[in-house]
Every structure is written in C-alpha cells, then in structure tokens.
Image 1: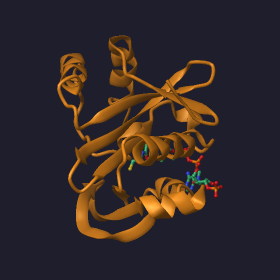
Image 2: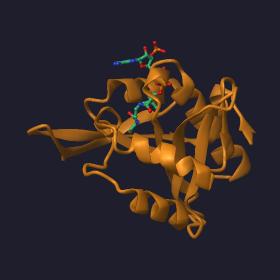
Image 3: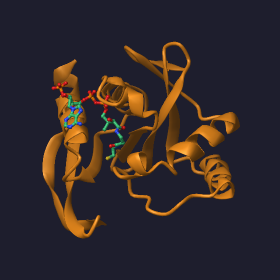
Length: 175
Ligand SMILES: CC(C)(COP(=O)(O)OP(=O)(O)OC[C@H]1O[C@@H](n2cnc3c(N)ncnc32)[C@H](O)[C@@H]1OP(=O)(O)O)[C@@H](O)C(=O)NCCC(=O)NCCS
C-alpha cells in the first residue's frame, strides 16, 4: 500500500478484474483511452495474468481512503539503463473525475518513480482533446515536449497526441 493525500495505490488483485472489465467497456471511459473495441472477460483476465510476468511494467489499483477501487495506474516500459518509464492512468469510476483523485495518484506514483525506483524521466502522452488530463499532468509538473501529429482517429477526425514529461530534478524542485 502506497499512501497519497486522498488515494492509496495498491497491487491489482484478481477480484478487481470484473470492475476493470466494466470500465474498459464503458464508452465514456474509453473515449479518453487507446482501446477501441469491446474487451471480453477472458481478454481482461488474460491481461491480469500478463501483468504477473512483466517486471518492467508496474501496475497499481487506485483506491480512495475508504477502500473504493476507482481506477488504475501504470509505470510502463521501465528502462533501467536510461532510467525512464511511461506513465498511464485512468479513473474508471466517472463520479470521481475532476475531484483530484487522478492528480493525487500521479503525484504519488511520481514519488515512487523518483524516490523508490530511482528513475530519471517519466513521460506520457494524451490526446489533444483531453484538456482535463493535460491540466492534471501540468499540476503534477509535467512539461509539454511535443506532439505526435494525427495520431488518433476519433469520431471521424484525426487528433494529435500531446507528449509530456518530467525529469527527476524538476520533480525535486517542486517538493
Ligand atoms: C485525466 C485524469 C487522470 C485527471 O485526474 P483528475 O483527478 O480527474 O483531475 P483533477 O480533478 O485534478 O483536474 C485536473 C484539472 O482539470 C480541470 N478539469 C476538470 N474537469 C475538466 C473538464 N471536463 N474539462 C477540462 N478541464 C477539466 C480541473 O479544473 C483541474 O484543474 P484545476 O485544479 O486547476 O481546477 C482523470 O480525470 C481520468 O482518469 N479521466 C478519464 C481517463 C483519462 O482521461 N485518462 C488519461 C488518459 S491519457
């Protein structure tokens, strides 16, 4: 259990799979994510099993202080030589959007990344229309790095992806 201000990060358990399966089939949630087609229960279970064999991808469940499971966060593709990784996050319970839980989860994960894992650079991308995510990342100290042009085809239009990152010394200055 890793404690944030208003959330905790914990390991993902098999019992979480049905809830996560509901989220990744909710059009309002996947609107913001890379997945596009319905995900079966079997696929979701296989995804859970695959997390057990991927030491360079750290997956966390996000829960409120009263233990409600509300989303997931990953520190992905950890490169121990360049000491970098990619962060991914989603709050699946929609009533928790815009209430600071995602932002607190990211801040908590950055502390893990820089103070526990010894990483140097955390990067991420989001779609240009995801203003809430960009604001959240800025609040956590991420800086705009560039754009992947026409990276997402969404509702009949191409959209850029916005690439952001934070370096260890930038994060330390904010503490
Ligand atoms: C993106 C996400 C992680 C942000 O976490 P959060 O805890 O909801 O974010 P916050 O509540 O701290 O809000 C961040 C900022 O966005 C603003 N905001 C909230 N809702 C907004 C909306 N619908 N549109 C634009 N800005 C919005 C807030 O005002 C806040 O800025 P402020 O603190 O200066 O007022 C979370 O909303 C989420 O998981 N969304 C769905 C999935 C997703 O988009 N994942 C990211 C994919 S890259």
